[in-house]
Image 1 (spheres, rainbow, N blue to C red):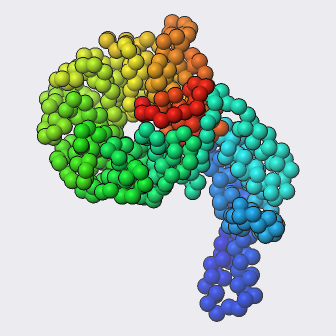
Image 2: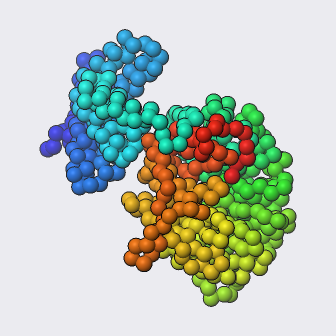
Image 3: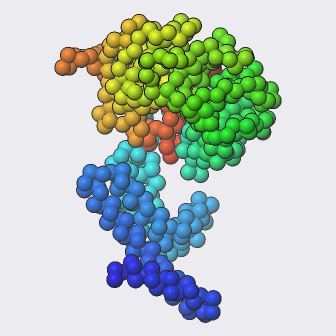
Length: 507
């Protein structure tokens, strides 16, 4: 019988007899429980080492993460860190000593996890665990953590005006801004309001179970949906609830679009809803044949949105009646799921589908103008710059096509084949981020040099900004400042010029 299995059997036997046992028996049970947990932690460490040798870095990180979490020392470490943060140094030192008594392998797990994070470019996360290992006497971890901390303090490519960590294991789900405030939604169902110029936390609230999309800001309200099937409206000035719409029957994955006095949003129940911005009352709803995963876009009295039912819809913004759908009913053209917001430019509408194609339609009647191949499924919003349509989201490649005929102009491939997030335009600069990557890439769409390779034109980023942690969502540009949210819950404000940021409207 394996050692870990034997421990488990003993644990069960001891648990059955706890009701009538004395203190000594309870103490013995606790020793066995800790030994069993320590054995499990060591097994995860060994698994992480094996995965790392095989090049499976992400799986190795998960294994080391489990080793840290299941160790009997984890709870003691948490108490020690709390005491240290409160300035109770002597009490914290005592708890750190208890950590090693509980599990001698714990500091090894911390060090290995930090090494793995550092190898992924997640320097801020690595510093956290190097410092924890250092507090347990690991001198090598102390040196490694100090080196990374110095790198993070070094001047960045763009001036960093401020950074703010949300805390509470919050991973940002989206960003939006008013003239003076930055709003952040998170996967833990929280909403944070920060001062645009300083990053000062103004208010925060626990609203939903989880939020997966960016908020919208309009009429003095912050609007967002969540896993609780509710569209929430908070007062932007103080975060107090203004109203909530609870008639959706499934998750609301993305924030609404706002036109005049109406908020438009989709739900996984297949409906597009139009509700009053003043009180949240339903004005109308339009049913499709599949879930709606993206924000709609509203322009000149029409709401445009896609559905998993393989159609793009144009609906009257006031009445909720269908103006056109693509493909039209009975058409031979076969689309695929449309899971993100279309882009409007002039008299045309552009969108991507999961069949790896980009479509250009006449905005007035939905007639097809051209279709182009993007090579991979399209999950994200396109960007349009002058005569160029740029596509990236859900793909590992940025593709630029001619807006008039759909012919490819140039492309750029992420070297690690990470999925790219939606492109963000600032004047003639395109900002791009990717999953599992700490960098922001910038392309100058008016001057960016391209080089010919194998008969193709390939773009070259003219700068790359390393944020020190994986970027969680697409950046937000407000005038001359770019706001970046990373997966450790940190918000960073970088200046795109050399002057301090000021109030302005969000792009």
